[in-house]
Amino acid sequence: MKTIYSAIQPSGIMTLGNYIGAVNNWRNMQNDKDNKCIFALADLHTITVRQNPEEFYKNCMSFYALFQAVGLDAKKSIIYLQSHVHQHSELAWLLNCYTYVGEMNRMTQFKDKSAKHADNINMGLMDYPVLMAADILLYDTDLVPVGYDQLQHIEITRDIATRVNNIYGDIFKVPEGFTPKIGAKITSLQDPTSKMSKSDPNPNGVISCLDPPEVIVKKFKKAVTDSDTTIAYDPENKAGISNLLGILAVATGKTIEQTVEDCQGLRYGDLKLRVADSVIEMLRPFQEEYRRLIDSKDYLMSCAKEGAQKASEIAEKTLKRFKQAIGYVVD
Ligand code: AQP
Image 1 (tube, protein in one colour):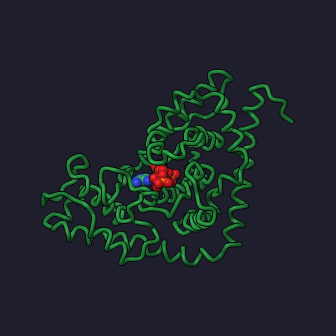
Image 2: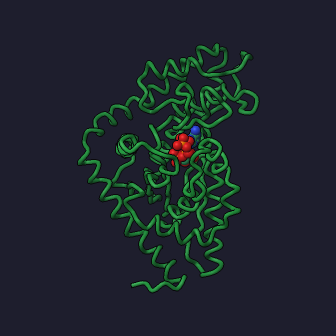
Image 3: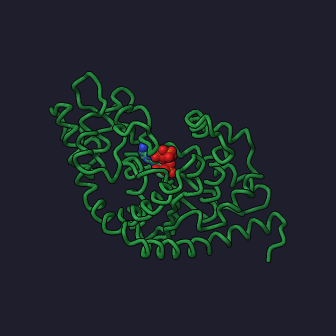
């Protein structure tokens, strides 16, 4: 049995990038009976960027409903809010003492986010990967499904775990990262060289999973492509078209090769409409289920509470093991 762990920040509305690069794969992994899956809302990570309290609360509830709407099932997987399981913060503190400032300074996301939020380069922003290492290591995780952007954080998690194990013996399982074949980097529709992000200030670059069909069509119609007319998958030289083909492949469940073949002879404008229609179809059942769930606050809260209890039982065992090894007086 493999333990799969992943998390997502409720830092806005779930994007098509999060859907394709993360939660859609999580659901597939959950449905493999050889996997034990644990999925979290990384709400402690989210405040590394300042949040408006009302919006933050709404986003947390919305993301928890989105998890269920996508098919993550509280009966099959553990699904919880990170802030409900105090062991994450405690292990992050301990791991801080086994992590070097130089390592954190080199993290690409820290550099990017420091540039984006120059007025709020807080310690949490720098410490983000250590909290992420704590998330993963608490559950003796084998595999962490992530997009390309998070692979560096998996590497540092492995480094920290190995460092601790070299000092104290077998404390942590050293996890592997896992990226999907297609969709590990869905890019902005307005800047196809950068990742589609929840916090992108340009709304036309981002498809929100809750966008209504007419908005999805409008955004795809405006997608930046190139001045060529050939339909080919070549992320380096034809980033915009390749992004559209990747999205279409996932939305239709076909391979990239098959998708490219199917689209030969289409004009760019027609390709954009085809992608929009497929995305609308892919998201339709998910959006309907979301609308059904979002008003069932008591139900969502009871699932979240149950998830946190299950997570906490596992997390406590790992934390205790590590504290004992360090020499803490543990009851
Ligand atoms: N564009 C993307 N393509 C593929 N995968 C993506 N992921 C995020 N964007 C894309 C994957 O989604 C998971 C959760 O990400 P996150 O919300 O925890 O953090 P993030 O990567 O910082 O996401 P955003 O949308 O860019 O958030 P903001 O704008 O708040 O920083 C991860 O597995 C990630 O790889």
